[in-house]
Image (spheres, rainbow, N blue to C red):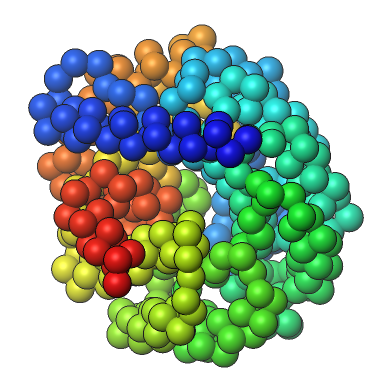
Length: 366
């Protein structure tokens, strides 16, 4: 297992020069990305103040369609994120993970969840852990507040209590060497003032990983919710507090590497909010992409520009990735006609950006 994971990491690093070369020259066949987000469905049992994706109705991909698609990806994926809506509303989520693992052997499978389905999530997570032993499985519970305040923000009475039951049950799976149990908080105008209190309470749960993301409007959400982003000054104060708390923890190995990436990401977000432009080149559409529940391929969920549809292209991802439409979208991104702090794309952007990696490497030596 360890040998397989090490091999996957080496393959990832060896591909970085080709990504950079293609970005600069825009010639030849584009390399397949390493970071894929599959939105499994838009259905959700929460009614969050920051999201209304549940309003969108589409014909979701089947397990067979994920099988066909992932076969066309080959071994290119290093990171799969399986998002929603609420991913665990898919009764076949274990089977989806199994076909993705069979065909692509990803290094990481990441699944965010609101944690409300405490009666089924732990069983399905353990089934995925057993089925995908060479992939690191990250389950991030989305917790944006504490207690009843969390329920109010999520529009779901009892969500906090249910999430705590799920968290407790998932904690019992920590003996699996390929399991990481994390917490994810979206910092919005609804919770930014209370963020220090929220962080301290959530940190008492002792998650393996704690990450935050800036609340922003996304085309993916359909009718976009306006006014969800926190004021810049308040967000900056929250992030400065978070980084101060993170510095108090002495980590080693992979934990220290992850923390260094997060420090760099948070600082990049602060610069973006001040300058409102791409701080480093964005490689969305080259290194990362998102696939909607109906098979539309996007460079990211912020703009949700359609490069092509897998159902209409015989589930041939490389064909869509090399299409005229895909090249047009990449050109727009490279021309910096958009900018955002989307976390999923930003972490792979950091990995490819030489200046960012120099700072991250330097911090690891401190």
